[in-house]
View (cartoon, rainbow, N blue to C red):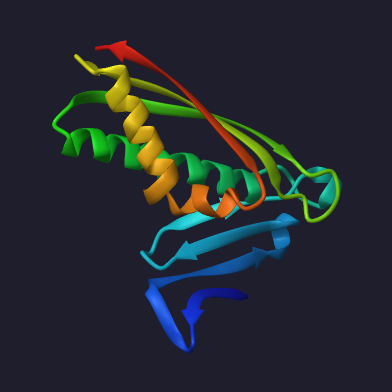
Length: 155
């Protein structure tokens, strides 16, 4: 069992923790139980002993990053009283060829829908997410070149 805690000088920050459990009968599958009590299953590729039963751990990092920034964009637009109705973000990633195979390039393409949404409001929400609010993007920016694009769709 691997227990993850975010700590600084003996104090836990924001109470975040998770427990990862290996499922030996499933090859290289793992179940994460988050501090909020949710379960997330991950698996390895068949060439690494996995059975392709769930997303790879790095896919979950990518998905979490996309959800983190999409959350910010929607929240920023809602707080600005914009009539946002939908938000999706497609991430394209490249990884280093040698270990550790960190992300080296990430492109986020947002498709935001709503009524009367202005391009400049959406662009500002994306910029604020990446420059100030999205913890996941901030961490990945240490190894990856990050770019963004967006389209606004009337809904």
